[in-house]
View (tube, rainbow, N blue to C red):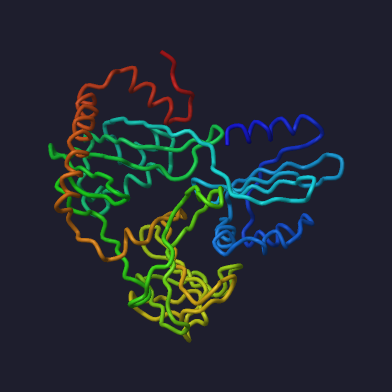
Length: 393
């Protein structure tokens, strides 16, 4: 992908213009094609999973397009689908070609500790200039520590995290590997293990869990952000889990929440989207019909029937495509479905403890450094938080 991007920049030097724009709300790939006179058969010729992937383009995502200066013809289009793959449309001598290619990004591994002067959210935002990191940190401790009552001035925290960087900008959600808040002499740890947060003893801290949306259904396709297909020789992705079932089988809300969408959605056909707490959303696609009364704004309970299995949209047979998103990032639903225990045991616990041992050493070292922070460091942070440039020294 590095070389593909260099190629696109080079094109802009020879009678072409490269622009960065945001995908508009309500825009679909088909409507985009029609706007730029691109044959819609390109979309319809995709297989089912690729059509579903194209329907995952999210409003507000930044994409790049290259136009021919002579006739304003679209030459190249790069639109992120998730944090790993992007849609690439290219004009060739034989016409337009659409494919999905990896996103080139750098992975920033960072860690820091700090003394809390007001609250963890503002302190982390001040230190890192990363709004999403501050949000994720607070969310990680939500079920184990009450920041509004437990934190005092002078308490300390430390964090180890990964953040993707794309073309010089923060890209996607940060991943907190481990963190600690020391308040009143007590250290409160959280550790990320297989995408869920646990305390140092292997007890799960996240209370949000789902039930299977279809009873006794077989899984026909699993979740993957990116994989290389050895036969097709191209990248594939499936941002959900498919449950094969008879047409008309009841589909239940996997969790309680508010219906934010109920209608047609491109290749997904009839779709219901439910917003849950803590930034989670679930998507139910290819429904034959909605249950009476299911509409936008309706509150539903976990286990309540919201529709029925079908094959509407671009589907090869009756099944439910079930998607799960946290802060608009697609994640594997099976990690959150209520089939796991709330505490790690056996081999998982043994593996977890090895990870914890190493992370605790690093976190405690970061905390120790905050007992007597350097005056210069405090001045730098103050200047940065007030909007000034980072002090040099």
